[in-house]
Length: 214
Length: 214
Image (cartoon, rainbow over all chains, first blue to last red; front, top):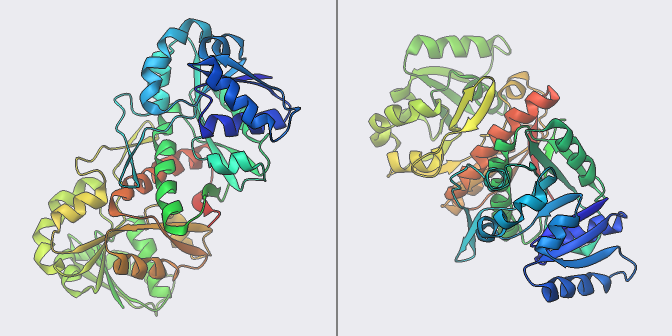
């Protein structure tokens, strides 16, 4: 599977690309600037030179990816996505974006007019099928490469697309995909990331979330 | 410890009272109507006639409790608490309230002007120390009495009060108290309950949340 990342040069995008490449998926790291994407690919290749990774501008990544994961900062999503809407039409687009603000080391959830970053993404990409996932995975743990004790709660209005991403999540060792219901529930999943930041601060760790009893 | 419940006749209040009474705490179930509270106590006594449980009107419960847990529906919190503010002054008050709406079997999070139900509670009770906890525990599992595989994420601005409630949470067999940071983080914990409702619907279960990696 060709998996492309829009805004893939941050820790979360690089971490996911690393894990999906490790699982054998061809990953394309997109960025506004090609050199920045090339830098991210070079950095990941230091871990393993044989990883199936390539760099592209965001537009090229959007065109090439079969599944496209958005990992921009929240504030960059609204300006970045509309020019890519045609290239992303008919595709499965994953929102891993968290609308989070930091002040004095504390994180808070930004109120999104559409309800969640994922719903905003769907509004910006009306011809794509948006699935919300991966927001709660620690970027640092993704980049380390060891198994991750965490669930990926997947929210979508399209049941098939949701199942595909739940399965993709399990390409990351230790991770379980969990059906989180409709895309609107992404609001709560995005919020969990903000809570994990506080827990990480209290416990000096990189925590994840598990759903117990399913 | 005397633990009182404001609006304690719903499933969540009864479930928590049952567990705390099982752990030996003297529990006072409060309600607008004394007969309703007496009905809840009678129902719990059917499980175990020796449980240290009493019924009271909300005002009596607020006056008697050393720790007071608010388990009203969200919409009832704003009318119920202000008349109790003097009785609750100087006390540790726990918010287990979730601002949740149901439509067609689907739950959604109600936007609270103060940020969360817990912060609204603190605004309504300025002389009390509000701690947010217990929102994510399945009422049905609480009422069953078996060990519960779940964490209680506790949020508060007062570190000592937070520690007391984290410890109290562990009176429920299987449960672990987790430090969720400041009271403002209750917004995200309340949201988890809405997400768990969707997961329960998808998996036909009563799920809980665990924080992994701490």
